Image (tube, rainbow, N blue to C red; front, side, top):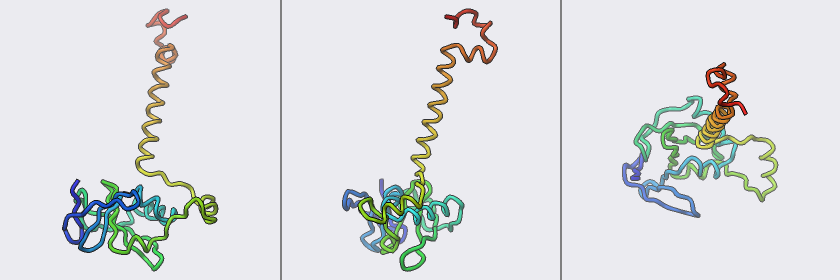
Length: 172
C-alpha cells in the first residue's frame, strides 16, 4: 500500500522500530500508525476518551488520510503539555501524528510497574472494532449452530408444528 503524507504530500517510508510498523515522513517527521498499536502504547484512559469522542462524532474534518485519502477525523486529546489534536481515519483505522504529538500523550502503564495494578482496577477494557466484529461473528455462528442442532434433532419441527408433516422421521 502506498502512503502519502497528509501535510507534505510526499511518499511515506515504512519503518519497523522495535517490531512496530509505521509509515514516516522524512520531511515533516510526522507518521502514520495503526489504531491497535497506538492503543497499546498510550494510557488507557486517554485512548478511551479519544475513542468515545470519535464514536460520538465530537470531531472535525481534517486532512486526507495517508492510506485511503478520505478526510481524517480530528479529535482533541489530553496531552501532558495541553491539548493534542489527533487525526484518525475511521475507514482504515490509521492515526496520523504530527512531529512530537505522540510523545506528548500519556504513555501506557506496563505490567511490571506498581501503577499497573491501580490502572487495571480503575478502568475497563475497551474493545477494538476487530474484537467487536469477531464477537458478533462468534455469536452468529453459535446461533446458526444451535438452529442446526435443533433442526437435526427434530425439536424445530415440533416447535413449528411440523412434526406431523415429517411423520415419524425424527422419532427414535
